[in-house]
Image 1 (cartoon, rainbow, N blue to C red):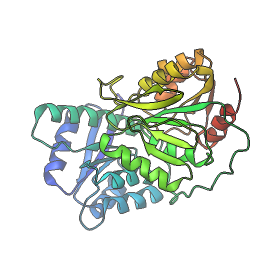
Image 2 (image 1 turned 120 degrees about the vertical axis):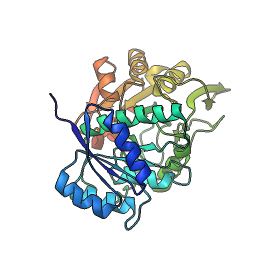
Image 3 (image 1 turned 135 degrees about the vertical axis):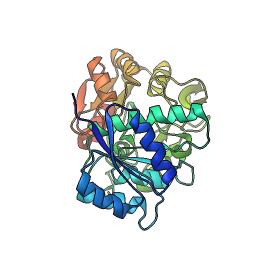
Image 4 (image 1 turned 90 degrees about the horizontal axis):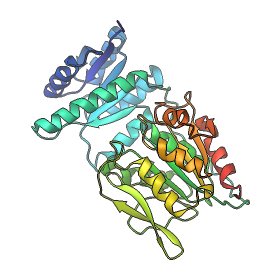
Length: 346
């Protein structure tokens, strides 16, 4: 029998600690080895109990959860899932947690609603099992993007990128290698609606090109990176000679909204596939893999992040296994590969 995943729960609320313990008690693969009401207690229990995965709240007494996470990921990197109140105001803290090395995050259930609680429990189980297999790296301090020289070679192709778990930081790294006069870039990252605006603004401040959250009627054009709005599919339509964004509040596809599959398929209907570079970055599941195969079959250049550099090699593997990928690329080399492909005419 496989060894159980040892989980340490860190939260200042006794109610939340008890709730998480009860959920984990129903998961055969998980054993709660301890709980901690603050980071100082957690630090001692990590040394003593050697957990495989940590659940961590942001707001805690004696030491902020982010400060603790930063110390932890420098000194003893391990998979961490943030369990906190997800609000627009709290989005920067959660995005910072991902930057510091947290694998994923989940919102505490807001109401005493049985259906919401069941959904939370199922999602928590999925994230903990995934986190136990995730690749985590030591946090080495804030990454400053070196400005990329303006490209003198024109771009002939658009770039479309899909990602999920681990994707916020993977996207940042890829875009850090892209010049201000970049080709049109559209991105679907699985992210809640309260986060996508903050995520786009964070990238826009850090990078030379324009990075924006998708809006209805927004033009896809060179020098602009468009991030799908959370809780809406990103589709496209023609307005004269321009291609513009169309926000779709329809049903989830592959359990996601926004869905990578929806974005890839919508773009292919308006832009010849041989004028596209499709990219699959780190993420759990297989959203977008089949649409990526359709793009490749139509003539798109297709790249996926390799296993060694992915936090979770789910979506890239699904695309690769389908034959939807021309080449597996490590994250540090992804930007150069994308730009070279985008410069090829035809």
